[in-house]
Length: 370
Image (cartoon, rainbow, N blue to C red):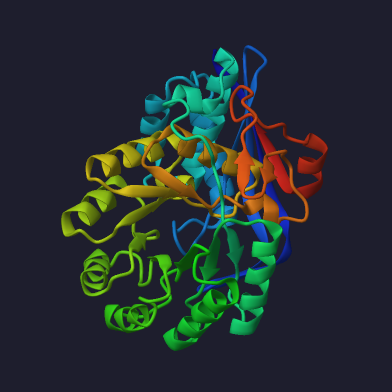
């Protein structure tokens, strides 16, 4: 089986409401959807969600890189030769992990379809029985976040993820404590600072105020790259620390392990270039006795399904947060959510059907590579 054609779509997924995190406000979510066709008639789908703040990739630039570099390079290759495909992309251009993830995900979709198996059966099988997800709350005033948190509990969500990190750290503490009071002491609450606290000292002072609030973890409290700072925070506080933006490569992972800088790792396919490397990172973390999460860059059903397949296949991936399809007012796939679980279909490949008419509707521009 050989890849004979690639179609690239630049799309913007409309959001139900603006997505507000520490470093940006998104009125919609730009993404790149690719379709790889083979000489056997199979089609595999992949997705890239570039983030200039995290991976250093910009939407329009990622489109050109896929169009001019990565997609022409894989024409004629077998999707099963995934290591060779990654090697070829790496030789062409360093970094650009979200763009590489789009190719990687489409290849795994093709592999699964070729052998009639869901992707998780190709990478480890069903290591976990259920895949749940939190209700993600954007940054707003404490009373608004508290009210939305109460509604989420009423809707059947089993956990909450609070976005904070905008403004003063004390304001974030007030947001978090307001939500905790609103939902009671037992509802799991994850807190994501998205690098918003400016120094380890500020982070330590804020976290100490939360030590009695039964917080599941504090995610990426300080700027990406400051792994030593994460280690300092972890050594001085009692709330578990999750690394997110600071872990983008295997080298980052090894440094986090060496410095004992985190309790939990947030692996995202868009940061590590897809399924192939996500599996490797999860296995390395398992060897170090660390738990993992598969996180989201707010992907559609395509990228979200890929992440859920990885989560399904690894014993030490204990949480997920791939809720992009729930945030969009228009989508292209049929990934199924039933609070508090996501339900993979068990069909071959990613197991989703892409609505071509809807994809065409949301496409800003497209191209074909043969």
